[in-house]
Length: 362
Image (cartoon, rainbow, N blue to C red):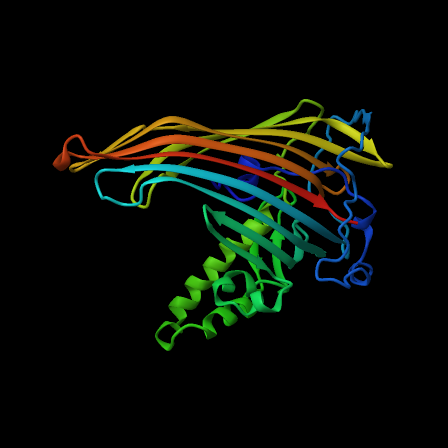
């Protein structure tokens, strides 16, 4: 998964959702009534089988943008399943050999409350991770985490998750869906710092920790955002993005790649009395170089495929995500050779897939 600029990072490899249901009109107090369990209610506001009636938007100056009502709260369920297989042949370093398959399943519940809308139309939101479940297996090895289990909340292996569970933090989002700022991390950073040795409790390490927490929370927030272009939109309107980044194929080798994303407004539909915009997105990566040479080493990238698709439904009036489904696939063969060891190579054949669904809950 390759990040891009701000909220478009999710557009590159998983994009945004359907229409805003009645729960979007609920206040924090209304939501609290259903919070008898750490996750609250789990019924989706719009079923995936729901069909809508096409709506014609005749306004030639129609824009999509984030403009939710102050005080409303949305709760989302995000489910991700990924599978990664890697077949390694290592004649250079005599490292691990053979094929390994890693399967990961994650489900978490994220709550979002609209605090205020600023004069520049950016939106100040409060977020909270209500619960998270994760299961990872690699061949015979397995690890599982459930934030609702007291034993897991005390397990030092899961510190990264435990310090953010149930903690409120804020984010400023532009009207076009860009993350401008993530703030309110003092409590989370303090919890991390208190477990560090005295030698690491310095302002420098505090700043590093703060940046790492921001990166982590950015991933959770961006998954429910949608990037909107600053232009009028109608049925079949398109917008795109192209960036250059690096694809790491090992701890020491990264290949430069170009990432191209295109999003299309398929049209507008009315579902349950609410008008939603339907967005279709796709993304692909293309290597800018397939051979890298430095000193006595030579790295090669072959059979490279990297694609992503997503279907997004949002409420037209508020720009709030309702439903999202996304699929990504990446495969390639990478080799590393050394002139000092002619005829010997380290070779890796990699295949990974990921499916993600995001649902607004009632």
